[in-house]
Image (cartoon, rainbow, N blue to C red; front, side, top):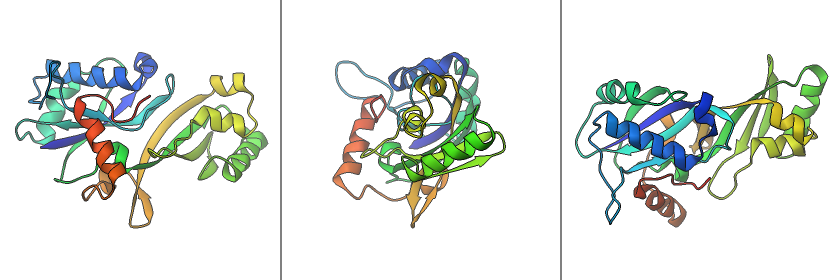
Length: 224
């Protein structure tokens, strides 16, 4: 069976690469005695695949990973076992069983939502307008946050810091802003929905099958 889980990545964990984050999850699963399936070959690793890479240093409340288990384990029991074994900065927000044939995270991922804090007033509105006209699918100012939705598919991924620079924010300032990935989306019936709702159905293209295969080796299915 396969369980998909959602995590935070904050504090010291936000400086971990995508590969290191997958290793953190693998070590936590081992400590928690989660009944994992293992890859074949000389170096056997737990079969865990993560979602689209997050730039190092950016925090997240929308990091996802798929765990392939060797026996049935209910989501509630999975959460009870894995949660206490996670390192600082990584919190388990939810877990659910995936139906057979569900797409891998990287095959299904289409867009990511980022919340940027530190731009105020008219300047925030000006940057939001430039983002909407350029690298972002959409962008709006919501309270004290600039919320942008960017591509993060296997074919095209937009780095949020690069997007801000393209919208006219100086490099040094863009690196100092508080940026959080707050949601991940996939296309379903012509609309974008979170992976909790949208990852249904089997792979329908060579690209999706390749992404599934990359996720079977115990590491991230999208390279950092």
